[in-house]
Length: 542
Image (cartoon, rainbow, N blue to C red; front, side, top):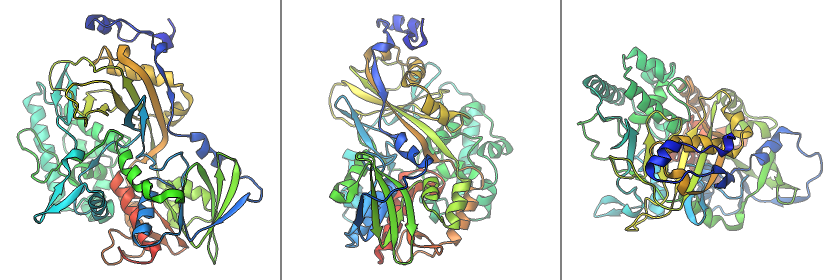
């Protein structure tokens, strides 16, 4: 039998009463990211005169969350003469949404935790979008956009349980280690401030000590070695950073918990101010769409930025329109470089020293996102009810979210499940992602998910996979030290600004913004840096 025609989990399918299915009958393929466009930078840039010259006051190169935030900041400051250039067909970067056979789903990031007071720029955005408002002197969140219950569950030891921390039949020793790690997180929070955005963290000695070692080494030194605890912490790191305990720094591993609401062992309860998270069927694509909507014809998708030249009197940005193969030259007074750090270093003939240093130190993780269109609800194993986020203990994948979980329909129906896999720990992960056919990932995914859901292959109509070769920065050891050096190289933030803009003396007409600069990829980091860049180039405070 050919591998591509393999009938996965045949025994489980028979036991469930579902007929085996030839997987070749499932439609599918890759979508969402045109890596060929980015790879145009691997070959020499076309040596010919531009086909068209355009002028604007400010160019924003890159239409991810950082670029969209910069555009919003310019608009709010009354600065309307700008153009945003984006590689893909739509803006949003890792926070874009899509649809499979009429059902919306995320193509990347799928939620936004309710931001704390350090993320002031994000809080302001939520207020602008009506997601939070002041009522009788208190902030009130729009519950229609908060994740509905049940929020998350774990398939562990043959059944589903509430929450993602393994609890089913674990022993006293495991519970004791959960409590010890909770105490360690509380101690870290007492010793120093861990913040999102990271630029508001304390940057003090105890954090630099953590930053000097891997999370795995730190846990070992603390005697925290329980398999269930280590699996959970490894899962958290892979989910937020794209790589596991052996890759990320101890500072990053602790920051995951200490920057938000800590870690709570069973019986300890949760923080009173833990308000959940925002999510939508299309994930953070909903936020990106709100940010892109006001831009109109100032948003120019399907553009490959190939060169950014900074002169005495302005900035020149050379761009390839991939739909027409025409070369465009944009002439501007200034630019926001909201490109991934390594791309920025490539397209600037004379990149500033801080950019060269960050690009040289950066490690990124490739990701795969798969959207599965189902004809009907899946049969379920015993235990906790179906949730928005569903994770399998010990799996290589990061589980799946249900696009229809936010729906108020009384009876479950067809839906899209979005499955995630981080490949940052796999030596050939990026090459495998590019070289393997979509059916390779289909077979791996179905073999994994058929364990709790043996009827999945029979109900799967279509699978669409999105590949991210450089999805996110991995906060490896020394990341915080690099950020501290970077912070010392930029001017201090003006009064009431959220964080300092990334502007350097050797590139005076540019401001930089991308989550790569923060060392890890979350919405709050990209948005805050983009907002700061837009405020700086608008020439006025927020």
